[in-house]
Image 1 (cartoon, helix red, strand yellow):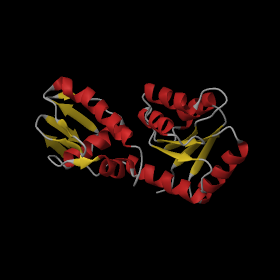
Image 2 (tube, rainbow, N blue to C red):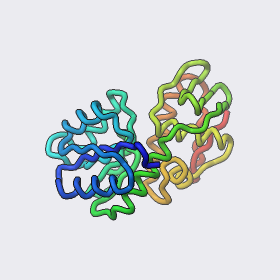
Image 3 (tube, rainbow, N blue to C red):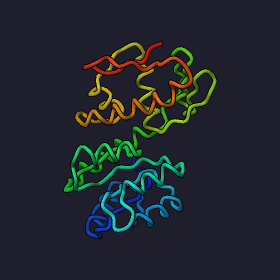
Length: 224
């Protein structure tokens, strides 16, 4: 898992940055570091890391803005936020901007390495295969989605969420089940799921009859 994987570590506190870098290298990762938001954007463009560990509180651009700019520029590199503020609003903000996970300071290095590996596993291309429900088609090998023949541009998290809904078409999946299957969490803020469901609906519904249905008080199901 770690062989040849490059992680960009962004934190303005040198002691934390160095600690994470040493731990990652011990576990076989290559590392790049940055101490500010602008440096992080330059490093991401130049080094093309496989994952970014991104502190939220930076001296120039905060981590949320760095992630927003990466996504706006088409860079879908997985991002794990490092934050000292474990509040639901911060968590939702980071994840809806395109972050993949968050770790609250102070953290154990073992837990951080486990989260890095988990996010890299989820970000790996699936084995392949084409899923179809009504006029919706998702190609796991090519990472493409089409509805009625029209290509739909999805973020990696939107893609994974839609793929899971399609694999379980017709079944009502709870927010907890979706958090665990798509984000890899056994607990978390259900608002994250609601936000990403709304993103999918915004992209899919203009192309045909709504396919994602809400079962009030339970969860969501994808069905014609």
